[in-house]
Picture 1 (cartoon, one colour):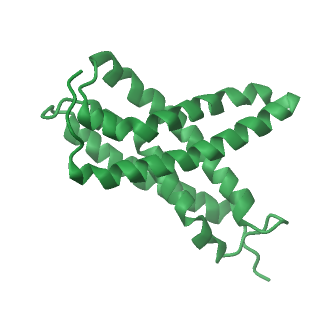
Picture 2 (cartoon, helix red, strand yellow):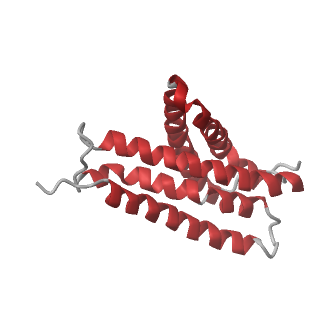
Picture 3 (tube, one colour):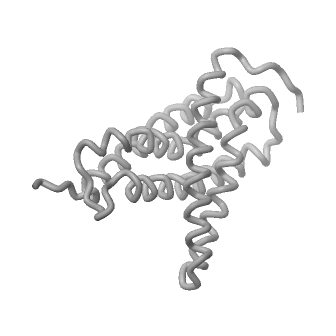
Length: 176
């Protein structure tokens, strides 16, 4: 594993991904604990264990993948696994936002959307993490790297749009 310094232009993307992953880590731990407390939902706790591990990987993924060369097996297996469990973490973030940003009776107001906007951005980042990690883990001048970056942008926008769309559809705004 050859190591190098993290280029300066990667500081901000690394920090943004790490902050989103830490936010998702908190949401995933919250859901894991709540599912373990109820006997009938313990079977559904396993995806949140994977989400916690994916969030931990994402906190250090950008600097590690930009400064070290990774083995081929890690470049092929880690991005899909982290991407899949990051989607579970995105669901955890979205559900926790729905519970916390709305009033106690579960009715959301349109003004609550601005409070939930960081969660939607986090959902977009988490949705884009699989292709993003694949792009970072691929060879620097490989033919698939550009395609992975394009997929990262598409998945990020789709993750944000799905979270926002579900917020609008399921947030059921009070018109009174």
